[in-house]
Image (cartoon, rainbow, N blue to C red; front, side, top):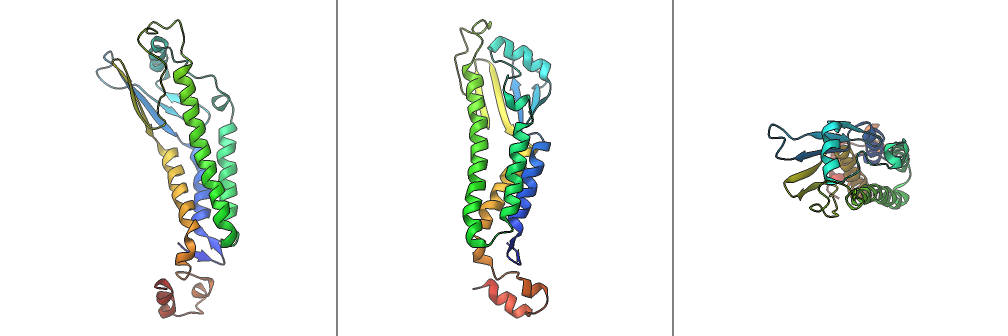
Length: 210
């Protein structure tokens, strides 16, 4: 990882990725059922909305008893977008502080990311346990917990949750934040003196092996 005047490039990139993540779909959700032999209807879950084949999902969830679209503040407001961008801005700023402080600030960034993922899993738990008691399949489908990523079967219906572009950006950001926590190991790779030509290539290479 490169350091220029004490700046963590990894943190700067991670902050930018977190800022961009809510612009893209976070999850791709599809379901497989006998009445759809030619393809699996799919929806895309964003930080503040749902897109895709929502009509097909409404039909399926009406039978199962899942309330769709879920009546949660996150999908009716931009609160999740603000949280992602606040975390991205904070992570970007963490890249500008000295390393001895940055390590602990990066822990806060990672905790924030785990918190967002945990909240998403909690919302899925709610959707699987707040079933409509009047649903046609209420005697077959019991309360269940959809995974954040993975699949679950309910009789002949299989619901699959897969990460999409936004999630890949978040995971990459988390990796970069974790990398910046151990950046002092490669501190000699690129320094301000190297960039200004004050040190020769031999000293740079020796710094890599320290």
